[in-house]
Amino acid sequence: AQSVAQPEDQVNVAEGNPLTVKCTYSVSGNPYLFWYVQYPNRGLQFLLKYITGDNLVKGSYGFEAEFNKSQTSFHLKKPSALVSDSALYFCAVRDIYNQGGKLIFGQGTELSVKP
Amino acid sequence: DVKVTQSSRYLVKRTGEKVFLECVQDMDHENMFWYRQDPGLGLRLIYFSYDVKMKEKGDIPEGYSVSREKKERFSLILESASTNQTSMYLCASSPVKLARDRETQYFGPGTRLLVL
Image 1 (cartoon, chains in turn purple, orange):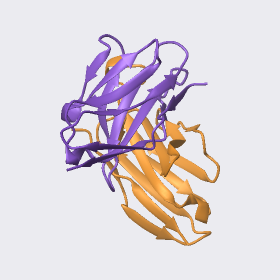
Image 2 (cartoon, chains in turn orange, red; image 1 turned 90 degrees about the vertical axis):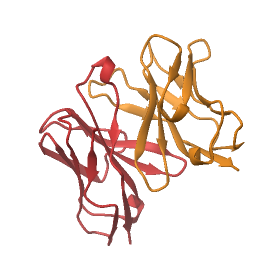
Image 3 (cartoon, helix red, strand yellow; image 1 turned 120 degrees about the vertical axis):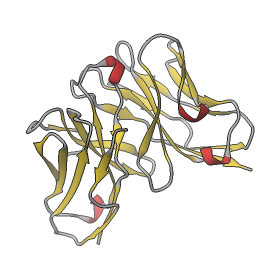
Image 4 (tube, chains in turn cyan, red; image 1 turned 135 degrees about the vertical axis):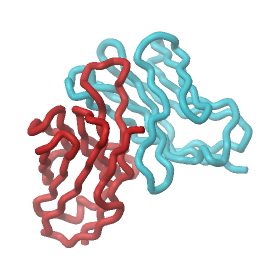
């Protein structure tokens, strides 16, 4: 079965420090991987995706993610965190066996950036 | 810009009531989805549709039904609301299936439903 895991419920970072939000996946075949962000009382916003190609993917708001096939990971990173990055982050993988583009989401990681 | 709208941001209903949650997208997307979001559980797929009048069960369809009579509109129906259906409901849409360069779901702002 395909699945996504976000091992940390919460990540705390000081403003200006680098941040990493972890994601590991389990799929058959080549994965399509996504990161979404949810600000308080808002829907999910797309950040970035890996479909194929370069393992380092750049996305919105200065975020990037590195696809690592050997470690089955797709960690989200940012070189210098901002207080405004505080939000709930979701990793997701596309269900390749489903023709409707169904996504399987991790449980989410709450990122807190303190001044 | 893609826009996905949901009919209500907040909704309070009583146990046993029939509840309709409406979702509309303006980008002519074929695929539409309904999720519920609960703390610690992430997003769980309730139903999805990849064409008008087509629907498929997701991971947690019990207690819900859906309707897609027009391409732009996807409705979630709680036939008889129960307290365990108190949750945040998110609608999403995405373009043509299996189009690798367009593989992105776009989400609405969510409806926070409280069932008393």
